[in-house]
Structures are given as structure tokens and as C-alpha cells.
Length: 94
Image (cartoon, rainbow, N blue to C red; front, side, top):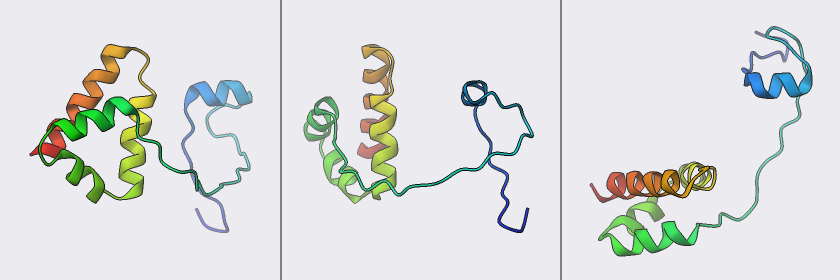
């Protein structure tokens, strides 16, 4: 939008917590995430079991790895976590 102003979509759930509605102006501060990436044991074990999957995972960028780990860690049920892991393994093994 110019002049240091950007359009940044915020989920409804977060807007409600902030007592903001669509179109309201807010100030944000971004911080670099320098935390070490911790691969869930279930993912690590699965990557080791599938030929070439761990090698393919290691070749991904840090942000791609983090997206995968965040999606798996964010699963609300074990069955959803398993589905995410299976999807990652299938994608990496091709």
C-alpha cells in the first residue's frame, strides 16, 4: 500500500481475541525465529524407514522443514498426525 503500510490478513479467531474487525488498523512487530528445529520422533523414524526420504527431507530448506514439522505438531489427533506423516513420506519418496 506504500508508506510502510501493508495489507496483512489475520484469521478471524485472532481478530476476535484482539477485539478487531476486518479493515481495522493494527501495528505488528516481527521477530526472526532462530529456534532449533526439533523433528518429532515419529517423523524421524518414518523418514529413516522409507528409502531416500530422510535424504530428501535434509535437502529441503529450513522453512520447508519447519512447515512440515509445524503441521505435524499442530495435529489435534494422533490419526491426523499419522496422515500428515504419511503424506510427507509419500511426497519425499517420489
